[in-house]
Image (cartoon, rainbow, N blue to C red; front, top):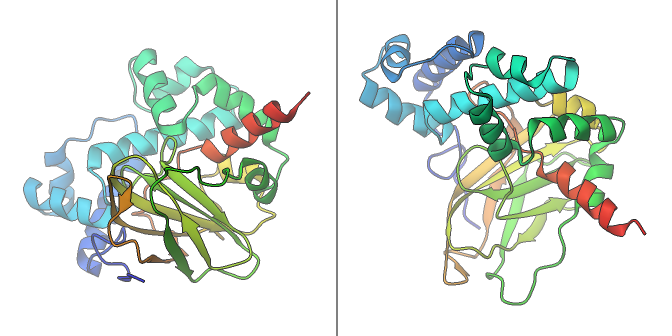
Length: 278
């Protein structure tokens, strides 16, 4: 089993306290005004770094760039507004910093996996369900013949009774549909299989089974959520490099963690239910 606790590149957030505080200070500025354009030069000045050094430090801490982190924050705020207000989509688009409705809708669908209008409808349909119910309905099918060789994933810090979800994503931001995913309910270990060639980050989150969908999808992530990451994981020619296994250390979320913007478990649950309806 390979593991490096909170170290880059094998885990988001591998950085000393000084650099972590600098990035969190910058993210605080961004969060206070999502509608504003934040240039790399301005953000670097806030951190008291050169632009080149700031970009390097930011990527080390967050596993993504300031521009992509800002985009994810804007989409996360749009999700909240869609779920908790009656504001029309155009107004929400403007409030989170987009001047083009088309661009906003495209970015929202890319991050979340569904259009703003469909997301609002999804929230209404599933708001009274629990995290456990959704994941049970969204459970991925067994691996198909010809998929890449699986590898073992073990969790450190998984609380008894909690349910963990792990997915392979193309970046350090959990967005869109993962290349592979799995659910852990009663054990701290599981096998994950992936098919498409590429480099991925394994991103995981753990929650109590009775966490409500409405709370999860409207307020970001509840306080009891634990997260963890590992990567990059390389897949080539139906083989996973170093497939002996990995260890993901779960910990409380930090301000420097990217927002969880994807809705693929909820979409998968909805699709599976529709498919099973006579």
